[in-house]
Length: 221
Image 1 (cartoon, rainbow, N blue to C red):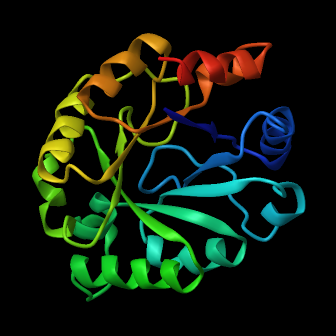
Image 2: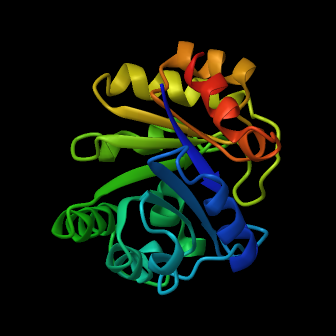
């Protein structure tokens, strides 16, 4: 099982420290971008400074933001290889100041990613009915199930995520399913059994002195 260490930091020094600790331990990083509008909190997320200290990693950027189409290009320019946008941000009128329909926005973001050799990942919160993903199954091949509330690190896994994982696995059996939030070896067993392919973890990895050992503990589930 693939493990993506997650960087969920409020400032650049925290991000720099976490990224430094992962040197030699991971090829991929997952960077949480929270805007304090889609989420309750705000995290560091400066695409201009990312290339300075993020060299050597493949970057998946998780846009927990109100209008992902406004910032996706900057992250693609910074080198992001995968971009996570949330179905809630595409569909919920509270997060929309635009006239485009959700499918058109999703296609536009997908095309912008493809133009840079990157891939779009469609995220969904555990509280959102997985049926909201149905219109996107024909052209999206990767999905992220957020198994905690959007924003803060260190939360406990929400069991409702298991139903969403199972739904995606049933409706799109060839899709790649990422699970993000509250991941421990015990939780990893449950989400793997439900159909998950990729685990994203922050607290479990960074609370350990031996980061390599923590990553291996999840990989070996």
